[in-house]
Length: 341
Ligand code: F6P
Image (cartoon, rainbow, N blue to C red):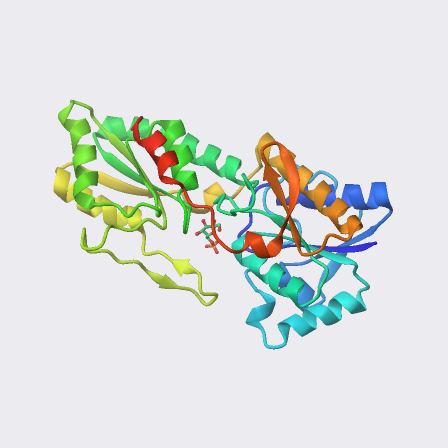
């Protein structure tokens, strides 16, 4: 079998572990040939690739980022993109494409699959918002980075009697905010799923100071917004790929809370540090298992499918189903966090 693999969309710790696992399972166990496209779908569209053998994936398990590079280019962005992809798959004699990506990548994968191309997807995102899998690799690493940052920020916040508003990633969902906030014992957690009321948030943080505490830590997901009419808010805009580019919720919250509480407040934006560096053991294992199962699905001819973690098992689910909705933080999960704020 001839396999093409690519990594697309925002990078994520664990991508290299998937690539390594695909190559090991395919080349060593099945005698397949594997090629890796450079910079996501762009590599497929431009026929830009390299052969992946055991040497090529040596020593990459613990490495962050992706040895193949990534981009947000999608076949549908270019005129004739789907036909071009189809042509290159045929010219290269590929039996399957394994795209490793998040929401946008999987939508593109589904489009190509519906156009008749043989695709087996692997989900990835630090945001953990792919509905058809219990967890995506990268999430555990990102939560660990954010939690360590929050622990560190507590000591400086206390020294200066400040409110620190810590913005974590999460365009549409608040999983990183929820988990890091719970793990670090934040005093307020603000997620996109629950538009915040600035009055209620001020009261929650203010209660801490009235009780004699010297500082407060608020974790906010970058995509969080205030409740309609609750405060003046700049939402930002979109980039050339149609992705939201936020104006910065932490900065705006810091201004409001400082004025309302008469306490010094500072925004801290963790940004891409959450996506960089070595994956945790959990993420390496999940990524490795996804790679293994993707190759097996390809050998069974199960195309148009995606690897997914359900409990402790890896299953295959239809790509079409996986791109229907995002996995948001349910009210019950938020309530569990709220009770320990
Ligand atoms: O989808 C993962 C993610 O990390 C989001 O949480 C974040 O909004 C986005 O990627 C940032 O993307 P970029 O690296 O293109 O700025």
